[in-house]
Length: 586
Ligand SMILES: Nc1ncnc2c1ncn2[C@@H]1O[C@H](COP(=O)(O)OP(=O)(O)OP(=O)(O)O)[C@@H](O)[C@H]1O
Picture 1 (tube, rainbow, N blue to C red):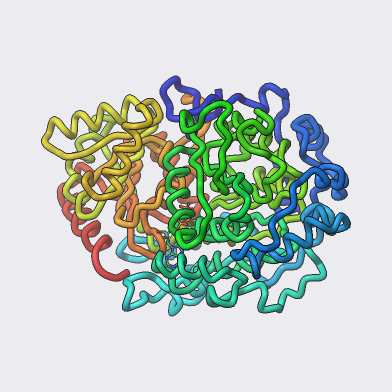
Picture 2: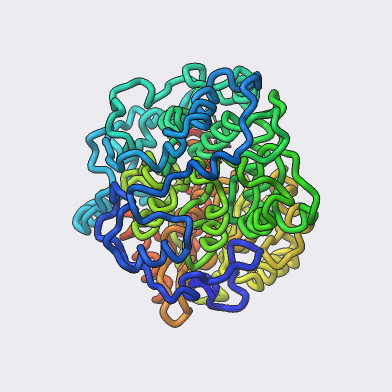
């Protein structure tokens, strides 16, 4: 049982069997006192012992040499046309034993580019001050990261300029690196070492310039020799394209075997990532394979270049040692939603098992909108000597998402309020998150019986049904989707302008649960994509849920406007506010 799995039918994020590694190992992870250790060395016996028992992880700043394994690795094709620019250094790296383990052999020192005290947690006084700053309209303070002008809408696109709204802090693994070098920030895609066929794909996707995270991450990801990267940026800011372009740049299309692996916590997210890779790579010869349950056959080799899937399936494939694909050919391992993918009480054991079988000089790329402190320690063990891009703590949520909470009389009052909100939910598209699969089906059925058009999706439904439901929602056939945490992360549907937390996400047994801040942040991040407008409504129906909302406000430092569901005036105001919030410019 994982903390998110205490109740039998509470949704888990991955529909494959996952075991509880921490429990099996009898280890409890300490809370690191230093949120950002700059070395993979750890003084913590628990982390060290756990890491060594996991295997494949070094708790030492000087990992074992990799030359013997590397000898067996087939060479890349230097004639491959796609890689004239970006792969050149990879080839050099692979053929020079002394630089065979670039990511792990470097000193684990960090250089910070901006001077911002980025990862300090705001004091509770700071948070109170922020709450007091709440605007009269109750929608909370405006942008807090400095430059209001930068948050202005791009008149042509209707989007918020990403210029300085989504600031990030970069830490370089290599002390020698010049932090002022333009290499570490790219204002255009052309100045990056991207093949022209990838540039064509980027423009065909409608991207004109890199977002903030792409601007910072791509030069680091594409530099040679390859270096690990741990990257954090708010939901909907373009992390997928960043790691996608890295994978597309580092595989050799002439070699018909997987050379990059990307794991994600759900089949739906894996499918979505595959679509992005296919779209950006459409002018190349690079092919992708979706590695999810039932998508592969035993003893049939995969001849595609990039594997995208869920960790249980990929581990199943890779553990057949060469019969499905040759793991020695993998050079990039991407973890999307990385904090979730390395959680020991969840998907972490599968992800670590995959890592153990990959060549030690594989480039590890970890991205997420959230990296809680205790996960950062593991992230740094997983991706030693990585470059880091972390968000300032107070900027983890997206300003363009207006957050409010709706006070209902009791559990039944939540359903009445949801039904009452249906019209607002269908102005654009909405996702309603519940805790249990049975609740998803129940409220979907009740809304349908009242004449509303909604669909439900959760991990107990069969795969074809899940794919069909999400496709129907993606193409706008369904306007309201009732779901569980299975869709809380990564799903990118730009028309979603409202998220309802019918149940507040929590961790732990019902008798002693805590609000699950990370899941809250990811859930509301299904709206407000790439600068679009959005709003979230969290239902409160008793003292406990009120306390949980208070704690979320405290932790995010963002106030939420309170609406009373029993007050018709309030509800009318809510309708108007929702309509205003979801239409027109910010
Ligand atoms: N440079 C760009 N220009 C315009 N649109 C972009 C650019 N990069 C990404 N996008 C779009 O922004 C949207 C959000 O991107 P993406 O899904 O990668 O966000 P994310 O940061 O991975 O979010 P999450 O944390 O929720 O997974 C997508 O629809 C994508 O097509």
